[in-house]
Length: 132
Image: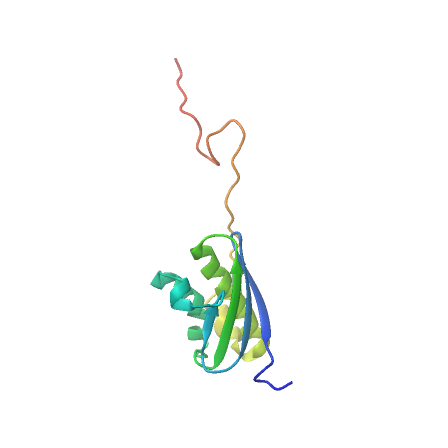
């Protein structure tokens, strides 16, 4: 198997989204769920977050990126894609670790939605209380 056909895998998670990223040496193709990046993400911010690892390491245009992502909303999916690509780049080239860590791209964002508590209206919100 040559380097052109060999994929490097990385898994990223954010909120309830899970992204499986495959990268290989190539021309800079970026496919998310069999669609182009700009077709999948309407917001520029989400596109920027998804491409951030490639831009930070100055490797955009050197790798073809194929993403399967599911769960959550578009912003959570963009964060999961970013982590998945970062982990795959780290596996591909250990020297990129410093620039990825400097931009906090190898750290999983562990914030999740807080659960609703019984007897309350939401996670923190309560019903209006009257003294008399």
